[in-house]
Amino acid sequence: MVIDAIKMALERMNRGYCRLSTLDYSKLEINESAKKKLSKEKYLERPFAYEFYHQLRKLMDNGEVDLGGPIIQAEVDKRYQHCFENGKVPDFIIHVPNNTDKNLAVIEFKLASNLRDIEEDFKKLVEFRQTLNYKYLIQVIIGNSYSLERARNHIKEISDNGEKIIIVEFNVENWRTREWEIEYKSNVA
Image 1 (cartoon, rainbow, N blue to C red):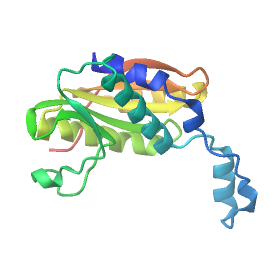
Image 2: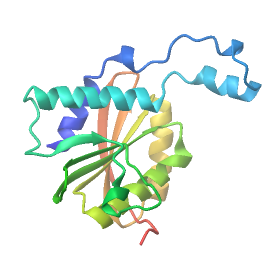
Image 3: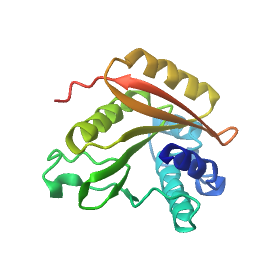
């Protein structure tokens, strides 16, 4: 149910709110390697996350999605509950505030081109399960067919018997999702 709602919200996102402007990066006063990197980027993680939040809230508010009480909140800092003193903040949590028995899902967003940080997200997801008993650990990965395939291969290499993480790929070429799972064993204790 929650996975279907996430996929529906992703596929309903408005492309206009996810794309970068047509800024001429050659005119920015930054070094050449940064200009090259920026000129290749067409999307950033944050606009996707914000538009996803908007779409999921619309689905929930309109009654198209009923998660049975839990709500979605963005970047909640759990240090106030004396958890994660090091400041680990997930992109989204779906829960009933102040009721750890209703911790439904923790969600991280990452661009497929950002392979080095995907494993850090996995560690964070596992820690939220182990500390606050979230039912679903979800990693949304955004990219084109090529970058998603590279990310998929990388993730399969680091997969190990452990906590189940649901991967939701979001393909920017066809605006469609694909879901699969891994098991990930983190060194987080």
